[in-house]
Image (cartoon, rainbow, N blue to C red; front, side, top):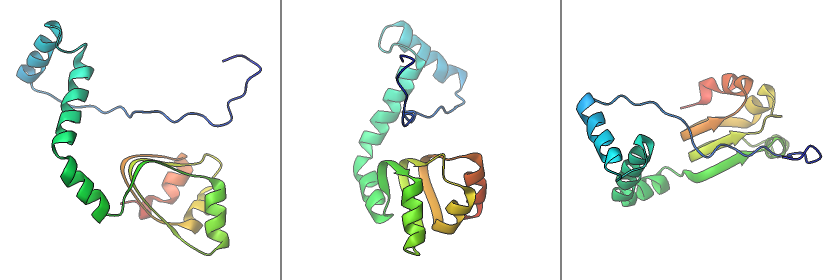
Length: 139
C-alpha cells in the first residue's frame, strides 16, 4: 500500500485457522489424492470435504439458522451501534453464524452496558478486554 494512503477500516480476515487430528491412514489417503493431482494440497482437500458436507446438510442448517434466529455471515458492531443502544436503553443480543466483530474502539464498560448476550457459531473478533467483560454473557 502506498505511504500516502491510509486504511480507514482494516479488512477482517476471511478465514479462521483450526487444527485437526487425523489418523495416519486417513492422512495417507489425503496425501495420495494430492500426489495424484485430485487436490492441490491437504488444505484444498479438507476445505472441499467440509464444503461438500455443508452442502449435503444445507436444508437442516438453513432450518436451524432460522429457528435459532441467527444472523448469517459477517455482523459488525460499531461503537455508534452500541452508543445508540445505550441511548435507547436497549440491550443487544448477538446471535451470529459466521463472524461477529465488535469494533476496536468499543470499551469494556460500553460492551457490558449494551450487550446482553453473545452467541456466535464461527468466530468473535473483539479486544481482549471486551471479550473478558462479556465472558459471563457468552454461550
